[in-house]
Length: 592
Image 1 (cartoon, helix red, strand yellow):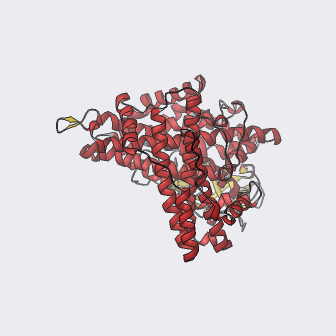
Image 2 (cartoon, rainbow, N blue to C red):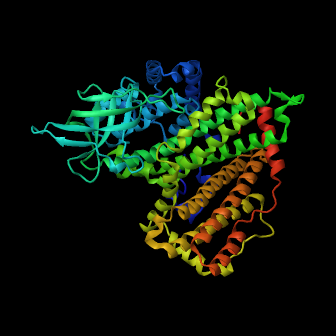
Image 3 (cartoon, rainbow, N blue to C red):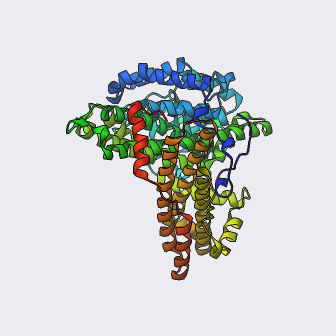
């Protein structure tokens, strides 16, 4: 990938990039596609045939499947070659994550191992720890788990009570505490455990081996979905952890935990795209076989509407996923040139894009929830039966809005993190917002008579950004430092930001496809509906925010401006959706 302009996290609010500076899925090279095909083949041969047994709670079977994945090298995509991995780019890691995302419970177990179960040691551990543990995690000889959540510490991770104290001889930390909702708990050999040393204010991080005396793993929890993944409580009772198993510095655990969560959100954003495509494929095949009133249900307008909307949201989520992945690759290269420790350099680059990570997590998980819900609906009574896979997909989807920080937390992070980055000087958010606010009376939609189709779409998205800046200025002036207490208003603006980033990513992909001389009609239809729907969501979110913070005179003024900035022109969304659905129906699978 050639270096071009790269925006900092959140900077999309005040700046634009060219389509030439984004990566789109249509650019995957032969090696990347081969890795994805290997993942698909593994799901077909090793995962899907056993999904009933793993969902019934066969932990040993899931463990054996994971180890097979390790033997094939699938667990080493993100790891450097010197530790037994393949050292692939972040874009390639996300493609593998997307493909594995179609694997139901296996996806959860696999991603927990390869991501949060391995990468804290890889990115923050020392060389001895990497050689001892990462090399075995890379091959599946060891399986990993990440132990952060406690009964009294979920979203507020630093409220954890698990404690570590140095032994009298100074050779061990004595670990005591309880962790819950731990993925892979039933079989993980290596636990990355977060605890406070003595009375520290913040967490530290430790590598704990399952066979250490005092480690007690409870039976698996009974869950709504992802039943094939092992989830259990773990108790640490006077566990002697060698002092050399401290990961990073004392008190660095909270930073490690947050950084790993940012990475987890990004990877989840890719996972749910793969799960969405799997659900769409199952659904269109059914719609092309099921008859009612003597005709295939895929011919009905109401069904086409649902199928098209599944595609549009998935395509948009995918566009944003690979846009930010390329940005991360660019920053990783830059950080590695600046930092001696390549592991920490990589993690700093990944965690920098915290705004976009939260956007992917929220939009992607809610897209999948929509897709699987409509999949059940299109299947009708059969969708409610455990006989077909859409029922499993529906149940498995729900956890994604809770995993890696709830969507409520992530919505708050979208705006809060962007504002904090701007306060640090990463980009001029508040200055541009103030200037726009001062010249509010002069705002128009900037429409010109000679603009092309894609220029029109670019202008509309630029106007969305103006609406966001006006809202940010308004709430900042009204609430100041107490804004964090106004979560409903923050959510309104975050929703505006999410829709804008997703729509802009979709536009950039479509622009690049046009430059590649692709047949554009169906992609323009996707973009038409996406921006049309985004405009209406942004307008409502803007109005909700304005009504909450502005006095009557200002409310009237701002609403008029928000109306101007969310105009999209005329779009025949019925015909656009039918065009998209007809392609899906004709292909009988997702090929967008």
